[in-house]
Amino acid sequence: MTVAVAAVAVLVLVASAVLLCGRSSADQYVSELDQVINEPRTPSVVVQCGTNEERHLNADNPVVSPGIPFGAHHTHEYVGNRSADAMSTNASLAAATSTCEEGDLSTYYWPVLRLTDGTGPDAHAQGGGLHGNTGEVLKPSSVEIRYEGSPVSDVLPMPRFLRMITGDPMAFTNNYGPNVRAHWGCADRPGRYTARYPLCGNATTLRTFYFASCWDGNNTDSASHRTHVAFPLVGGACPPRTFPIPRLRVTVGYDVPAGRPFAIDSFPEELRDPATDHAMFINVMPEAQMSELVGHLNGAR
Image (cartoon, rainbow, N blue to C red; front, side, top):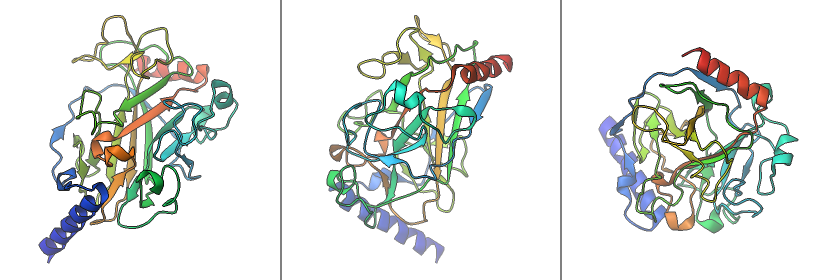
């Protein structure tokens, strides 16, 4: 009986995926987590920001498409700064309130996750059904905002209003290039992940976003929103002419009902491919709070 139920669940997922993407996409769902995370332990600080209980959602992208309402063409979920939207500026973010503790006004956001075997309330809205993103939006069961130190050196404070993106929202059309950083996992299998949608059964489904932690020392943004920062080299040292800053790691958990098909929002042409998972960040943490955070990361080494 258990085997039969599992087989039916996989068939439902496969059938829904075919309808979802207009092509055979059974291989988007996997039971095995085929990648292993091997990282040195470093000091870290967790900032509590809630799980978006207020349901701050929009189809804007204040990092990549500032000033353009619905510029994301898919819906984002936010924690932190309550005012973040397409019209956000440094001044408006600094004057807002936040869901984060200790006055952290930063904004942390990523595409929503949906159950795809039904219809969501935004079936006829921009960012939702009008852009091919259908289904009920799943609320996160957990969100962890964690800042980590360097395994090889002290870190410098992040500059205020630093903007970053991690992951490639156009991974499918970019043929899964070097910017893909999708990390999907299951809570009952720590240290393992996949770039596909994991079938976690009754365990919590996890998405983990690792941000770059080497800064050019001058710029808070760049035309690509990437070249002013870099990821460390193998071993943890920063590339030449960059400087170590705290590494931001955001982990979002979902209690996906077993056997129900699910997918993230994406640009229409990306077909909701799991490899397109990505997240954005704007640092609006007060300088005193950032200095205290850095002091803890460096002092605990």
